[in-house]
Image (cartoon, rainbow, N blue to C red):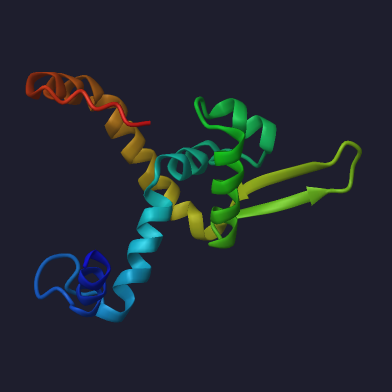
Length: 139
């Protein structure tokens, strides 16, 4: 029944709020985009690439906790969406650099603000979780 409910929801447009201006036929794709750019690894990759292009190994070093599999997966998706360039260099050993595209520069500002907000308020959020008994630490 869940799948049927989802498809029914996708056909209805919101009458009020921030989703009201989004045509119902675009809502599913917009949710996919938000899922892609809003996940923790995508945000961190975009933040790390702000200053200059980086090689895969440098990205892996600068993003603590990301597995090689998840880094590869996330880079592939960000590249497919046009948010990153992937530039292979014909060298031995082979070198591939990743960089932000013009499309992702506006997103970088938003991502950086969100990361800063999370860093600034993590103690307060941790205290709130402790006081409600929900010490969820999803990774």
